[in-house]
Image (cartoon, rainbow, N blue to C red; front, side, top):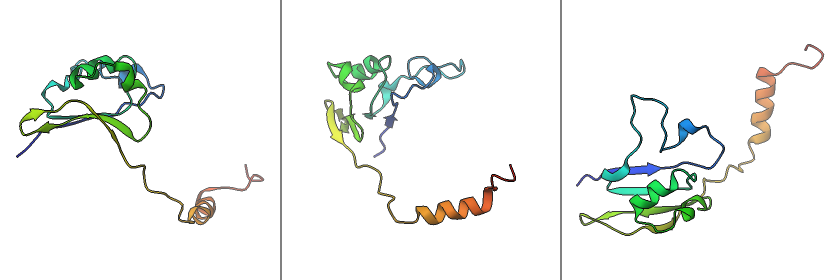
Length: 120
């Protein structure tokens, strides 16, 4: 059984308006309408996009979507052919990169690409 899967991941990071769901600058691409998605996952959203996605999730509080912490999301699943209510979920953070290789990588990069200050 195939289900539509829509992941909406918009961080509140000062991106330009072209990165928002509600206003897309490219006229050939319409504004997003996630209404046909079977499963919807929404991470932290901007204030302009939160009401649109809150309606799709059936969530009463769009501000909760703007205040979602890191590694968390709101999800609406398609289960048994029927959508579930919005649920809060936590995700795993990325794996640790503390392997002790950073000094070796930095040294190799400097040896390959850096020049002494006296040459500059």
